[in-house]
Amino acid sequence: MSRNSIPFTKMHGLGNDFVVINSLVNKYDLSPAFIAELANRHTGIGFDQLLLIEPSHQANIFCRIFNADGSEAEQCGNGLRCIARYIHEEGLDVSKQLSIETRAGLFTAEISDYDHIRVCMGQPVITQPQLELRLASKTASVCILSLGNPHAVMQVNDLNDASLEQLAKEIAADKHFPDGVNIGFMQVAGAKHIRLRTFERGSGETYACGSNACATAVAGILQNVSQSPVKVDFRYGSLTIEWEGKQQPVYMTGAAARVYSGEVK
Image (cartoon, rainbow, N blue to C red):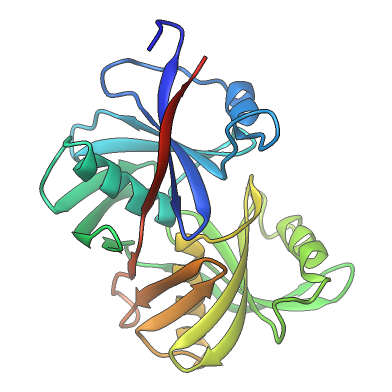
């Protein structure tokens, strides 16, 4: 590796893809413009989020999370599983019980194997179990809640509805979300089975979003259309979400995949 290069590892959780950069020893100061350049899928590496790991005084590592547009996020569920695998696989900590600090606080991860990483996502903060948003195209009924980052969840009949992308833009621009929001459109397939399409703040539509899967399962349970544990399907796989009700944390279990390593100038 040359002195002007930055090593990275490409990872993904169910198609939600990341670039992981280790800043524990060599310190990297990455500008939003540089991150956006790297995120470009035609001229850069391409990713939904960049995960920058730094030292922590109270956890195994501190993870900073940057969206594809260079903006910084509070936390990322799929990213937490990938970071847990990275820490373990790189030998930064070989125990299977790990702690990760983010802007949203501390998260713990338990590794059974790399296909089954269980993360405690903390207690959901429920702002509005059901709120009617008067949008330009229609009135949308959403559940608003937070898991360290904001989510709006809406039940739909068909995830292939061509209008959902425009609807996501209208929801994201609503006055209730001055700092943006992660949007989940859920299709209920059964009492313990949800299909999900997700639009992430700062990245647009992604193939999967762990925290949005958690938020969607919580919304389904609150609205009495789901029961824990809930299987949440994305295009490239599923997550298992457990939530036993108010005052209890949400648990997310799923895979983390390593794709390749390289370096960027």
